[in-house]
Length: 397
Image 1 (cartoon, rainbow, N blue to C red):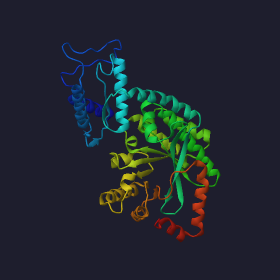
Image 2: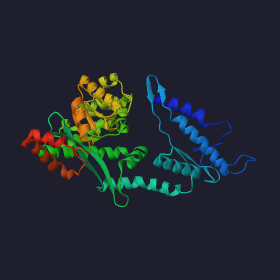
Image 3: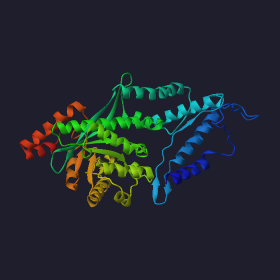
Image 4: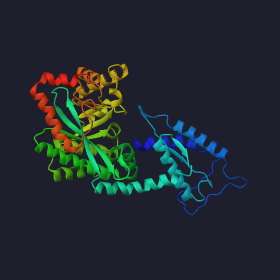
């Protein structure tokens, strides 16, 4: 599947991005200096605008979903542009500056960007970021905050999700959407995931020792599932932490779970045999088929927050959520709705038969040290009066 999809992408790219008049060079020949074609002047502002316009057109064309059999594949593309000799006089400089422009396009979401002379700072920032991440991971600057999940059947806290955070001494609190993609691009995600899983497993055991029967969920990158050693590394973590595997759940995005890679499928089955639960995160944003869900050893579906938002007044979202809950029940899977922020959303999900909810209406993510006290307080309220507890949950705030 991946090979065919890549081939389709390359065929489309060659149609839109490689005009016959284009001149270029190979990065495999670092000693080669590109030169302006004979009789052609150096790039002017009009040339830059022309290249940028063509690149913008290429980017738009490439973003159209690819069709592979009965599946549609979404494409994200960021393009960086560097022109000779304005932005460099050798291929090393041009590649470096094009790379910087590409990262800026990615950060701003613009899709494409021409190098503007400021990329050196961006490039240095990205080059230093990997070293900083490694030092921070070893130095205790990464941590997991936990967001609780409420059972709509019992009214009790059923589990918590660990969300990785990076407290940088200079940059401050770095958002996950900034460092996670970078970690995936550089291959450092493997170390981050290993730390996240081990930290979650250790905390799971601590919760059990504190008398709390909670499931701890942690997020795993789709790239980790492609790692042939992942299941073995997970087993090592479980042994070191002496954690009950049934108290640990790995959340994997829909695209990662339905991968047709043999390595990924073997990993998923091996994880299930260990007793660790598997959750399909952001369900509804990918293209999982009923047949794939039936064949894979998943235990839980998490409805993406984009479908939960305003569910009580959005007929489309309501239909999707109702169908997902029905699908989960047919397959014997637990269904969790994330991103619940209002009492109306909570009530609607309860009426639809959703199993658990998670979101700011219940609680924001909290520090590890606050979890036990918060859960015990919630359970004490429930024990004192079930009726008033549910009224408290659904009262307007």
